[in-house]
Image 1 (spheres, protein in one colour):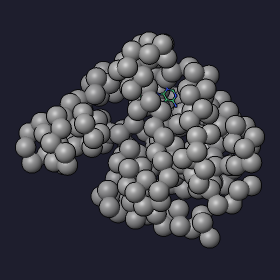
Image 2 (cartoon, rainbow, N blue to C red):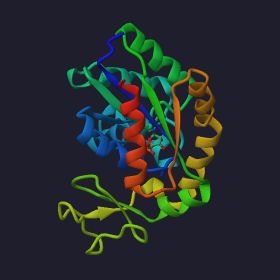
Image 3 (cartoon, protein in one colour):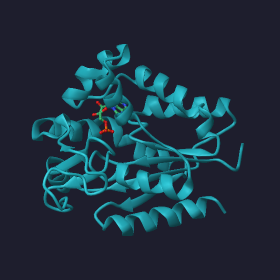
Length: 222
Ligand code: AMP
């Protein structure tokens, strides 16, 4: 095993704040965030063949078939910028994806060092997701009620335009949460059984969660 690499999974339901935490972890640990959701949205926007294949699943809030996501993910984690580690955000979401990931890493003499599970109850997630607004330019995330931008519809960081993700509508969110409970949450037991699961309450303030996540990561490195 290459002890130096820091291969992390940020796990949790949609709206738990994985993306927000991942962006800060990228800065601190200098390893890339790999968000399969972002890869899907970029592919759909670019009109690529892959984007056309996954579009209907993403709009419905359903999971893209395992093999399609796995192929893309495995191509991504062998890139040179993943040499010293990576933060997976939104992957794996099923047990076959987790098995596929383990097998792919094993071939490279690597493994997942830690799974950071950010847990938030459903009622809170619905409030967070329906009010979420994202910057078109830099991807920063805001909330109409909990972290509103200073100027309505405009990003505080780069002045970009804010938009609501199509799958953040109430109907699609309900499906995304159902999918999470049915297909993704069994991974909690899966990783607990492998002794790499670290649970963190996602109800605290962003800075508090970040500090807990960093303590766990620093513990993994010693
Ligand atoms: P996210 O931004 O992580 O909430 O992902 C948005 C959407 O992309 C999901 O609702 C799925 O349709 C698709 N997606 C992202 N990651 C995965 C994955 N690991 N497996 C299957 N579908 C995914």
